[in-house]
Length: 262
Image (cartoon, rainbow, N blue to C red; front, side):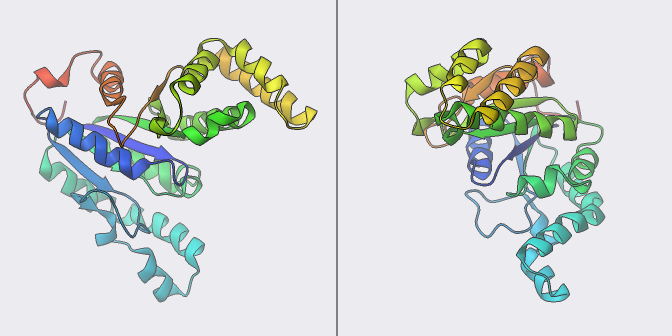
C-alpha cells in the first residue's frame, strides 16, 4: 500500500481532489481506500471507506464537553490518537493499492499541533507515504500572496517530514497564461522577485517576501507545482507520474499486480 495525505488550507479543494484522484486510479484498475480524517466535516463529494466520524464526531464532542466549534475540533483531532490502531486495522483489512487520506479542513489544527504529525506517522507506519499539498489558485493573483502560500507549504513539509508534492488546485479557474506565469516564477525566482517589487503592499512586506523567496529558491524545496483541476481531471496524469517517481522510483504501479505492503 501507498499512503497519500491530502493537505491544504480550508477551501483549497482537498476533498474534491481525494474524490477525483481516487476515481482516476480506479479507472486505471487500481484499488483505493478513501479515508476521511476530518471529524467535523458534514458533507463529502465521495463515500469514505474509512471514516473517523465513526469514532469521533465534533458535534458530539461539543455536546459532551460543552465546547465551542474550535475547541471541540482541537479536542476531536487530539482524541483521534486513541483510535489510530482501529483506523489502521480498517485500512489494512481493505489491502488497497493506494490509501488516500483526506485531512481536516483546518490545516493549522492538524499540521501544527503535535497530534497531526503523530497521527500521520502512526497511520502509515511500515508503508511508503507522501503528502500532496494544495496551493489554492487564488494565491497566484498576487506575487506576495503566492510567496506566503509557498512558505506555508514548506512549513507543513517540515512538520510532517515526509516527501511532499505541491499542487496548484482549481487550475480550471485561472487562465493558461496565469499558470504559465506561475511556472516561470518557480523556474526563474528573479522573475518573481521583480514582480514582488511592483506589488501594491508596503516596502517592508515586499522586502520580507523577497527574502523568503530567495531562501526558498536556494533550498529548492518547492520544486515543481503541478496544476490540477478536480473538476476537469486536468493534471491528474502528471500528478500520478510524480507520485510514482517519488514512491516507486519511477516504476509504474499500473503495470504491477495488486498486492500487499510494498
